[in-house]
Length: 153
Image (cartoon, rainbow, N blue to C red; front, side):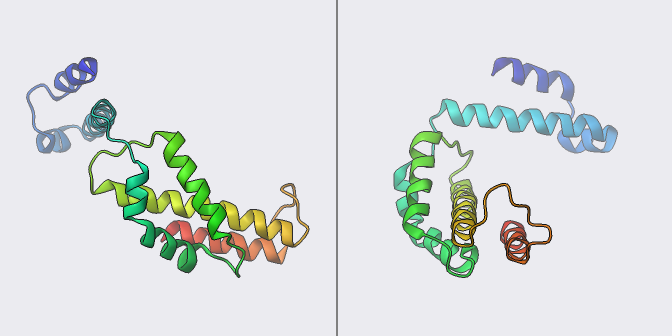
């Protein structure tokens, strides 16, 4: 951590980020990247991990996201998806930098877990294997479009 602090100080050489941005844009983004790494290391050192209590706090939001955004033609198994999200949080050691960032992390986790569940159920229900490509398959093409829409919003 001290190495990152020293490296940032060296690169900045007494200049503010605004000065750096106007002087050398590449150096500015390098400093921003290092600062982001440093804040993540600090968060990990402080024990800023998402825990089950955070999931309980955002439970209603997660269910709403899964039912209204992720679900595709009823293929979502809510119970299985919630178990996957819980196991990710309990085993994954997911770090957050600020308390405000927890909500976004949990929403993204729910979207990804839900989409994986929907795709697995869709493929199983239609006799498709993981090796079947979506190109030329109207069912998988429609799902791929749904997946992109969910991930982009």
